[in-house]
Length: 474
Image (cartoon, rainbow, N blue to C red; front, side, top):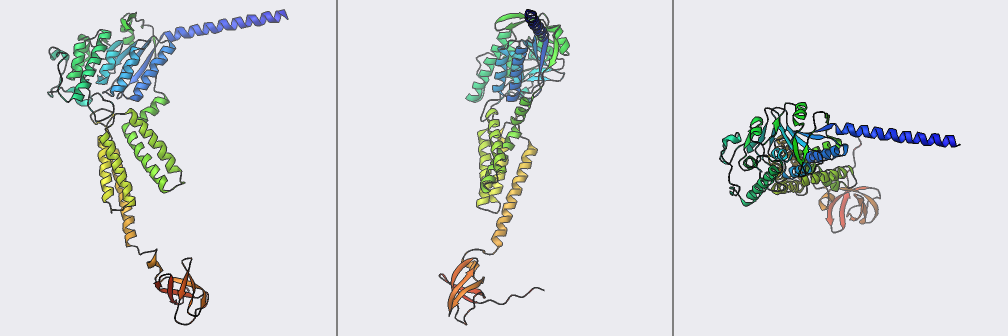
């Protein structure tokens, strides 16, 4: 018995030792890993969620470095701030890598690059044009394609051609709301530059005047740390460099790190679909029509279920996207006019007006100057065609109903046929359209079951006459 106990204890200790060895090996392997995250589109709530969770995963896995491979035309201020806050508070150093050749870190990408512990660019890439763009509602996005021009309409080119930095207290032209957003963006990017010791004056020009830089010029102007052609070269050149981590210096050891690509999971893919402006617009339209059809046909369930889910998803998408309240009001007016066409047929007037309002709302709902936030013209055209077809259908039904004879009420009873129920002299009762009526006939008495035609209505009494016999069909 004692021998069995000793054997069990020995086996347990050996198992614990083996488990500890495996865990230690796993920690060593994870510490030798560089996680690669990709930002290849506009900065949005979906991309922010993906990057933030990627940084958390890198910290949990004990990765030695996170490489944010970036090619972005810009995006939303709120999402950019979320990404920057996550980078600044990350336990793992983050290297932003503008790649491949031809990529850009425009607008919001410039802010993310300045927030990163290490800024790297591939040859043939660019950075800058970070001027925010005003919208009529929601969060303020950074500019996109047209942000490469300054207030005078001239391309800024390299910072070396821009002259001295403007005075920090110079008041920018424009309305007060735009001035406020511009000054806030300038203060933010200057603070990021100070954290990592980068060129704050050029950063201000990138925001105020939409200045841009090539990869080599960015290194010369202390905007980027160095250039690298690929991830392997980045790890080699980053080895031994000192970065600021929460106010403390940290020496990077990256030469022996293995590269692990972190792709977009199902959550990120679904969020990317929902937060797409075109999908959000469709969700709102489908949700509205689904609920309306359910109200017209109680108990159908399918339209109401689909409509309810779509409407909630559409409202969620609008809650994370910057939208224009005027565009949303136009869409609501257009849908209301289309529904009014059903209840008060105007032979297309209300329907056409609703279609125009719906199309205008779709155009103005999101800012077309911001990359990734424009509404698709083909999609709007499809919605317009569907709305016009709906209006045409309602108008045709109204016209057909207008031409059709009266099928209810007093006019429907005249010349209608009924059947005698009982008769006494000149008075009796007849059945007409399932109803029992008082009837009279001054001629010969009518037999029960005989068919009669209604000639006149006097109050609740019908004047009837014998109906012509029906001809038998051969």
